[in-house]
Length: 405
Image (tube, rainbow, N blue to C red; front, side):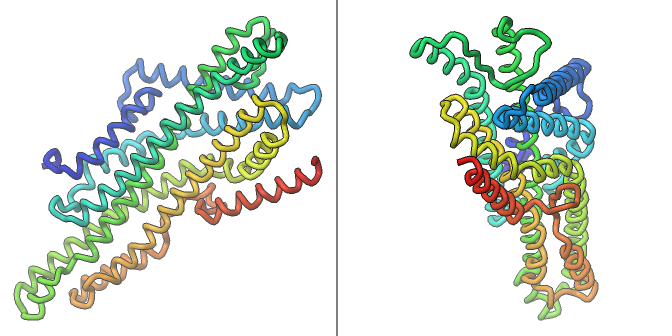
């Protein structure tokens, strides 16, 4: 029956895309991975952790605390640390990710009407949004990897051919090495290129799966809202007014309400667990986001070196995209959970039985607390937070421009 549902296949195709991406970085299947896949996960984790240690050693090894050098390393260190956190969190909470994955693949579809135009519109709309976000993150990650890995070498070749500069060695990132990295330039460049690709892949997949889960939760909330609005059809109201099939209609309404409440309860609990999983990374983003956005924006505007300008610009853009992504999905999640109250209001609740009205009232009370994504409970990730981060960054930017220019 599930396989015959064409609407389900639309969502399954996007889940299969996430499955394919997760397999490449040894995170899928979430449960039941083979020994070779677990070995790949452990090796990837160790490599990313080594990169974080390498950048930390670089940051604390400067003989002179040049602020440009610190800006050059600190955002990279922050990204790698968040990559380690996200990679670890997905592995630790693999049961949660597997449960949500299976829910949207198999368990959600008993409330979806195959012949409902409204349900079809909702599913196609949210599937399109998911595809757009995931493909943007995918292609942006590919572009970012290509630019970060190739641009230093291309600039170095240009400087050598055009200006005769032979003593300048550029790298994808500035890492500490226990040996002379100029002497072993090729090896250091290959290592940094590979680790840049690994970090971007892990980071990108993490953003993809979290954005997809949140959007699918919003999709199901919209479907639940539509089910509430149509829980008593005009035909049912007409039959009730004529005294026909009263017991059958009321019992059907109560059964549907219980299914809707069970679905809402599932989504509420899984959203709260996702919030707990993402809390550390969001707290780190909020705490350091404004500072890093300000510093990278200021630096790419004041440095007179093309390579550094492009490098800092991509740092700035990546930080802005990451914070916007988290705030946007947090805002969308809160809005959709709050809108469920309106769905109850717009239903034909005056014609429901007293028992059904009590159940509806209980549902309204539950929806008064919206689903939220927070930074470990200290603040809510929404567009107001994004506006606050941007405003703070701009204030810091103006302060730096006043002091240094």
